[in-house]
Image 1 (cartoon, rainbow, N blue to C red):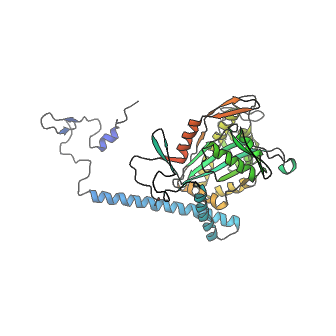
Image 2 (image 1 turned 180 degrees about the horizontal axis):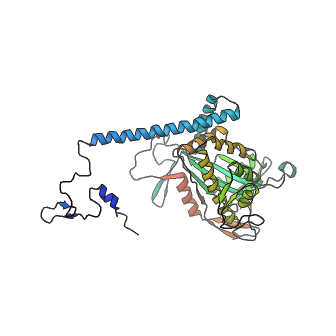
Image 3 (image 1 turned 45 degrees about the vertical axis):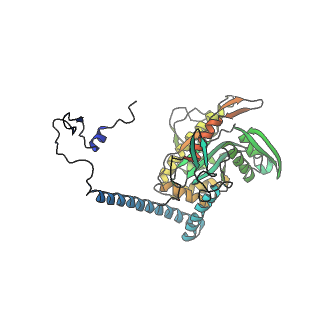
Length: 416
């Protein structure tokens, strides 16, 4: 590996030393020559004192131009989404724009920790929002919005059987509303955690079990989803989890097709389908659902193998959907509307539209997905996934916190 301070030829040119030349001090006067053929009276690469104000003005103009371009891009994105929503909802564009603005405020308010003070409220920088780990300080990022996305498997209507089903896929989707960056944390379905046991409105207590079973203690919709949300928050050291999106796995096919199909190079072959390991395929309909749902229960790692396929599929879906939406932001609204036919959520249309506008404004095209580290073991009744608590804590710090630099000034509100 090259030394960290090694410089390229291009960087040497920027320092005023021509490519390929050597810089050696003159033995008599200590001056530096740049080779026998170099001109000793060559203009220096650094600016003169007279040039500094002009360069500073150019730099300031560049910053202002960048801000103008970013503002125009945001206005265009929001404008298109507003028009699409106005058509879909039959409302006035001004009312829809207000709805999106209110959605942004709701997201930020709901996602900040309720039991600790904000930076503005705290008497010191360290109060409440700051933690220390291995000698380094980290501050909670109040711009983070978290949505627990779960895919539940239910064979029959819950109104007929009373069985809510299980959450076979659980992921936490986070967005930094300041930078537009999206991150995803995969929570293996077999993760062992304390789960609230509810029968109707009666709370019976807690018991450690697979997190997938949290969904079964509820009505199959809102209360089931909220129970999963509480369990996920416990897994992630009580990070705020205010939003959920509970999707019936039968909706995978229609949502996949609404995005125009999704291309993957399969990580494994799926029985009774045309999906063959390492052979690229564009997934449609039931094939998409089978790819993210199938698992070989005879294998100890079956849930992790499936989680790897789900993560791969999600990255591919995200890249394609956002790529298409770059030309037509209304596509994301259409996908949201399709998903609503197969899901329950407390994420309102205005809140979703705000997230979509923020995402497109910052040009995010790739999704960072990480699965919580741990080890699957064979329990008395079923497979148990025991988390590596140190690794989980580090994931929480990486996603929800930012490092505090030594002697850094107190944080202030971001300005554009």
